[in-house]
Length: 244
Image (cartoon, rainbow, N blue to C red; front, side, top):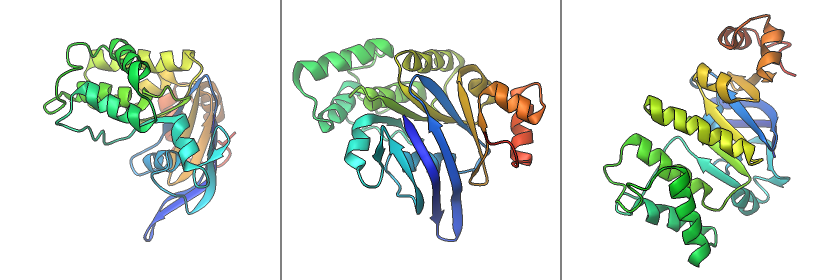
């Protein structure tokens, strides 16, 4: 479970996150939705310990991202907006390296890599160097790397960005499978269809604050709109009274 409590983050004079609070439960997909520059990626970076918040706190399975960053990192797998693969390593070697960083080794690690390769359909390129990979192949390797240690909490920053239709469909099914395993899945997206198809709960961030927070039905009811896209537009245009 991930708990975000009134976090704030500024970069110089720009306050990217002003006041963001929400809870992402195990066994659910929680979507962070918002316009460009709303603070979605900054919020995720605070949760996976890349950035320290200026105020507030974030907890992963009860561990504070500032006080216990190593405990947090053991419990999360993150797909950031920049994938950062090592181009001279094969897909298998990229995933193995991250497994070793998490203290894995030997047969257990190799079995886990093979399981992920099959799950993510990487058989054709698992032993190729990642230099020259397509965007879809890079995303699959990055997800394998993030999940090699079987974390309970999975953070995905726009995981279908740049994917073709078939890869997008496969990615959505994979995200659903994580939820079905009881994982806490938190992902950011600006694609309304994706959020509507996947999310159990939606956190709408606008201008660095939570403009709305609830199930898709709750958001539609609160805004008086029949479809989620209209509800989103209403939420970011009128924040008062929409947060549950």
